[in-house]
Image 1: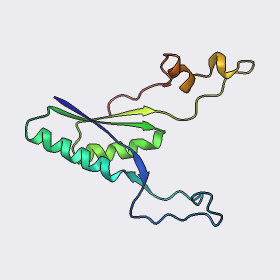
Image 2: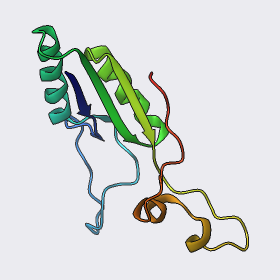
Image 3: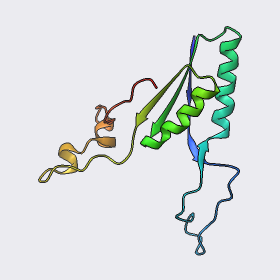
Image 4: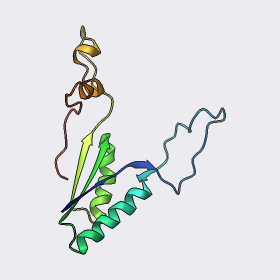
Length: 124
């Protein structure tokens, strides 16, 4: 049995978050990001299942910008056998003269049954 663990990158729980004075959001300076603690627990349990012989492979997957690969490297260091990064972000700008309905891609293509993902990085 293969175990797939979804990994989310969040603001590090050990770093204090500063709220804007008008309480409209978080300060623009981005604090340190790390793996969600609950994702860490799930990954640790998946590795334990593999050690017990219940699982044959542990695969970590994350969807997001290029810098999410750092979190996947952490997952590999924790014992995952493979890591898959699905690049996701702002869809590419449509060429001049074409509207989003004609060739934008992204969520509209996914809703229409298309792929919506520009590409997929292989195993890391």
